[in-house]
Amino acid sequence: MILASTIHSFLKRESSSGILLMAASALAMVFANTSLSEYYDLLLSTEFEVRIGEANIAKPLLLWINDGLMAVFFFLIGLELKREVLEGQLPKVRNVLLPAFGAIGGMLVPSLIYLAFNHQDPIAVNGWAIPAATDIAFALGILSLLGSRVPLSLKIFLTTIAIFDDLGAIIIIALFYTSNISALALTTVAVCLIVLSILNRMHITAKSLYIFIGIIMWIAMLKSGVHATLAGVLLAFFIPMTSPNTSFSPAKTLERDLHTLVAFGILPIFAFANAGISFNGVTMADVLHPIPLGIALGLLVGKVIGVFGFCYAALKLGFASLPKGMDQRSLLGVSALCGIGFTMSLFIGSLAFQQTGVNTLVDERIGILLGSLFSGLLGYAILYTHFKNPSRDEPKTKK
Image (cartoon, rainbow, N blue to C red; front, side):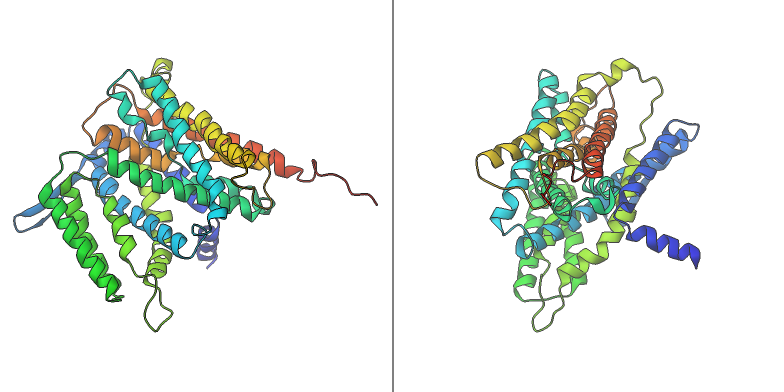
């Protein structure tokens, strides 16, 4: 009973998902840098096949995780986006202008920094979007370590930036990381979308029916050349938000049910499969190679300049105002936390190099790891020192 209570308490904590991601990543690096590396590589390269008659899908375990499990992750992102658009903060323009500016700067500036280091290398250029990502689970996990001193407005601000960031990542993947387009497969995707639209307009709320069509669409997307994870986002947009004559919400129910699975299952599995960086033979020259260096500086420096700089400009121009409970120093700390790219950066990196058939002589994950690590430390240090003495800069009232 004590163990069960401890586990339940752990899962309830906001930082738990981030802690599991760190543990999974650390375990992957232990496997990759010890005698267990042979088994780690063997596990991820083991091919699994699903066959129905003449139709089959055969992929190594790593790609089943990156193409399959991450489609569920993007399905959850799609559900969250839909809820925010229909019922959350996104329809209230004044509330989202500041994080929208921050998200744009947080994607643009890191990408430009990366390109400044790699624009002359046609292979390296493929990784321009890697430092544009933010890992919301890690960022919120670190923010929650500061406890109740952190105002709710700061958490909402960070979450809203991450929503825009995820939307940007979806657009980037759809537009820039596609290859060998199959007209037949895309036609199948279009038919699935039409069927989903009909189901939605008929107010059919059977979740299993939507998921069945979604699986067919995922398979078609897998064969189309467009990354299969986008099927999860498209499916989410057609899940009904409300049910006729009842208070039941299929979209909210799925979002709630998937949250624990994604946070404590899919993302740690993805981290374990993709964070196994071998440091055997890695030299300082490898770390300072333009690819990992551009990624690390894009995350560490670019996110701070981009998020804080664009928000500061929006404030000075009068386009937006700081949420209650926030000031410029807390905005700076959150901007640094946005440099924790980790999960999304690893995912985009797998698209930029491994899955597009482009190979590099260095491991881009070194830059992701270093940039995310130092961004997390910087953001935590700024916010910890700021909230340690929250009233230090406040004017004293006369008695």
